[in-house]
Image (cartoon, rainbow, N blue to C red; front, side, top):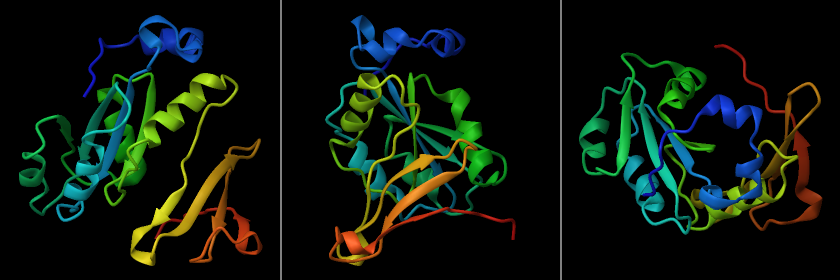
Length: 191
């Protein structure tokens, strides 16, 4: 995994142009991949194994161990190249990712769930797009459901001017079937 000196986040936020131009030490911006884990010992090996040899030269993997009570820590011990940060209790999704952010060093941050299996090129594709398009602030790859015979679940989202995500969803297992594509507004409510 590529390592980098800690970046001055304030400087990157006020003048990210060197990163976005992909110049010098920023030719391959460091990508921090943050994975949230809660009782996912059975899911972690496939997820982390898929990240071991990405086709991108500079990335770090951080697992936020979000108060698990299973053997997740024992599983994570088998991945010495992964930085593990632990919460005392389950902080939920937003709280867990926010807990992990200060532990990241990357110019770009990629948030993953522990049940995701990465394509070897996905970090390269997403980061290259961000570098080439400085007007873009967030990207998402397509999500394929392996348990559903490779059906395409999500092929992108965008944010409205009010900050609400609109997701393009394909429901057909033989996707892409244009007639099966629709936009949805994902919403979550407290239980």
